[in-house]
Length: 376
Ligand code: PAD
Ligand code: ZN
Ligand code: ZN
Image (cartoon, rainbow, N blue to C red; front, side, top):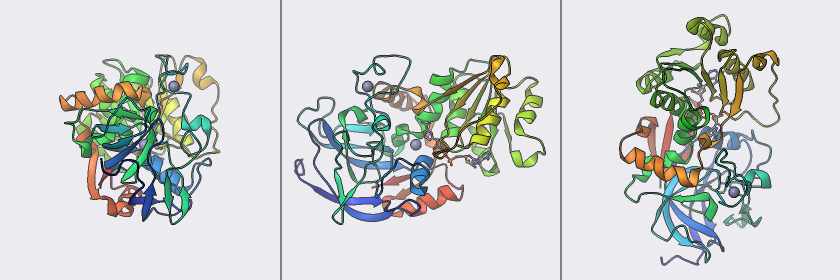
């Protein structure tokens, strides 16, 4: 491509300070270094985690920052050592990298590559520099994805190649929301046919958990949300019952206990609050239930519960990006989608031009959107 090796000036949404809305800017994006890839993002979804960063809920983020981690695009240029993709390939950035060499990458039980941005606790590229500048200032990356920029740079480990025929404006949701929720049920919890499930939070990720439970053959799927506007979609996607905590004068775990007699086999917390994490745990079967934590509470909070909640045999597990080994598993999920095996289109409630990103965040704040996809 004519732009290879050059700095590209393009549109991006920069969050200058914690608590501010993203601001549309022209940024400079440096060429990819040795094992990096520069991608032209075509479509990107807005996930609650982007909003957590915007709001300043995570303490280890530096500003100004370009967030966005649910994207799909086309490779523009690659660094000299890159072998996994070439310019023109269609790709999805990965929120968790896959170096393929560390003890975690070699362990089939985990997707938590040790060469990740969490262990390094900074939001720069692996070599501790940034590829973004705006108005003469260094701008930080986020999760090595930063998809709220028309062009972005990521390490080779943070990208996977997908079928060039897949519609990028839809499959961007494989970058986080759909894969996270669907995998929490299918891959992390391994929900069995005939089992009972409860899903706390019916946003984009929670609805994807509902779809995963349904695909796994769950006989009962109880959706829990304080926003009843989410119920219709949840039922369309497989929820058998939907309840709001506001309609009861007792805690929702007691309600679920009465509904099921013993509690559900699998409960999922997909809100990001420690109080609902404990409620989700207590909603699962005392003798054999599994509670899966998916939501991300703000930094600094600690989860507390009485040990008896788990001593009888309940399990409490976590799930990050659905437990998938993203580099290998996402292209397969995209193929499943192309073969109509999963309904990710149902999650896209709004599609807006990238310039309307602030409106997109507003829809999320108002509880109106499931996923708002932004198109460059
Ligand atoms: P969302 O904001 O679209 O959905 C959250 C839902 O929870 C909304 O429908 C709310 O109405 C509902 N809700 C809020 N408070 C309550 C309450 N007290 N009781 C019941 N329902 C409530 O978010 P999302 O679906 O994009 O993301 C959900 C969480 O998952 C969020 O914390 C996000 O940061 C986290 C996440 N985790 C991963 C991961 O890999 N673990 C990936 C992506 C997102
Ligand atoms: Zn996300
Ligand atoms: Zn690794």
